[in-house]
Amino acid sequence: MGQGLLKSGFARVDGVMCCEGVSLEQIARDVGTPVYVYSAATIRDRYELLDRTLAPVPHRVHYTLKANTSRGVLRVLRDLGAGVDVVSGGELHRALRAGFAPHDIIFGGVGKTERELAEALDAGILLINAESEREVTLIDALAGERGVTAPVSLRVNPEVMLDTPHEYIKTGGRGHKFGVPYDQVVHVAERIAALAHVKLLGLDMHIGSQLSRIDPYREGTERLASIFHELGAKGIDTLEYLDIGGGLGVRYDTEQPPDLERFAELVLPAVRDTGLRLIMEPGRFVVGNAAALVTRVLYRKHSGGKDYVVADAGMTELLRPSHYGAYHRILPMRERPDHATVDVVGPVCESGDFLALDRELDDVQPGDELVVCDVGAYGYAMASNYNSRCRPAEVLVDGDRYAVITAREQYEDLTRLEIAQPEWTTVEGRNR
Ligand code: LLP
Image 1 (tube, rainbow, N blue to C red):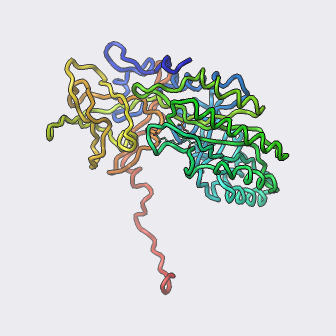
Image 2: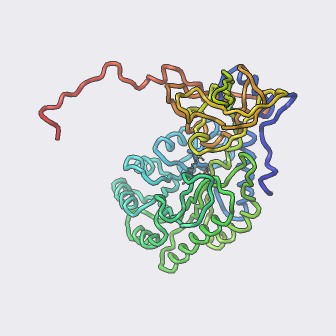
Image 3: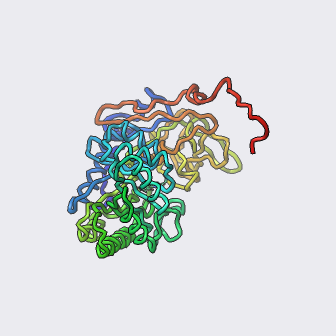
């Protein structure tokens, strides 16, 4: 099935934008704006679609928490049987708190601290994706102190050519900071095999994000498979998992996301050949199309020949447009007969604070609501408190019901960690 046919949980019904059976207008009225609204049905649909695509081989889908860490969203995925992929002690904490069992969790990331590695070992997670020889040695020492054997997968940089929409989301090319350089992998694997407290259980890669072509996956998977065979020939036969990362693109505008049938045809044979269990770590694919950000128009402005819509959400709520030049469709909650070409900007004191530039939009007026589409991945997760703005609420819709899953931040939350009466430490002499 091509992704062009994917269903969306969001549609206009009787003139007003709805998420499944609930009007977004009602959520905005009840919960206020800005507000992120998630469609549980869309999350289930995407997870199940990927799960079916991978069905020809033994596999597990480990949802990548960094795309969206909300407990309400994680619970939907946990109930579907997903595993998770975390990249920090904080994400490990969130995954466990959301009810994932340790053996549902893999832990990746280029700069894990000793504390984070210790936490992963103490929790007893499924796999630690190691990225360097030094990290492997540290894991071995920490596991030795605990009298356990650490389950390690080696993140390989497969050094494939990529076509991501932004340089920042390319990761698996030659010279990137991620993974072990391809020509050093066998050496590091041999080191692991020689250590007493680590067991090499997998090979792993993640080549980039918002990918539309299948070829880099095929090439990367074949390169992992070839390392697997080379290791086998050297007598290293402990491997059980082949993790080919995340990165599957979604449709934001007119882009053509990867065709999953072709993905299965081109990628799965190399996996089947190894007899290993396949792991994928999708983030965007699972949640990207599953949310909208509802924001209210505060003002209209004309300046220097430009027409502005000033909304109550901007780069603090959704960073992707200003950080990556990313495109998100923006629809009016209720349509208006006239159109205008506008910049949709937020309230933050930065000229780079925008949701859309030179966008043809209905001629919306102060008080109207806008629906910013496809914000489920890297939306709320990248929201900030800059300008001391409170982060928005998150709402989950399931059929004809909705629930607030993350409360809107309050002013007290902004100052909660500040020490009103700091305790000074006086240092004797000069501290060199
Ligand atoms: N696995 C690893 C090791 C990753 O680094 C990532 C994402 C994923 C899986 C999931 O990738 P996905 O399936 O979501 O493409 N903030 C950027 C995207 C950064 C992706 C970082 N790594 C954005 O808003 O486009």
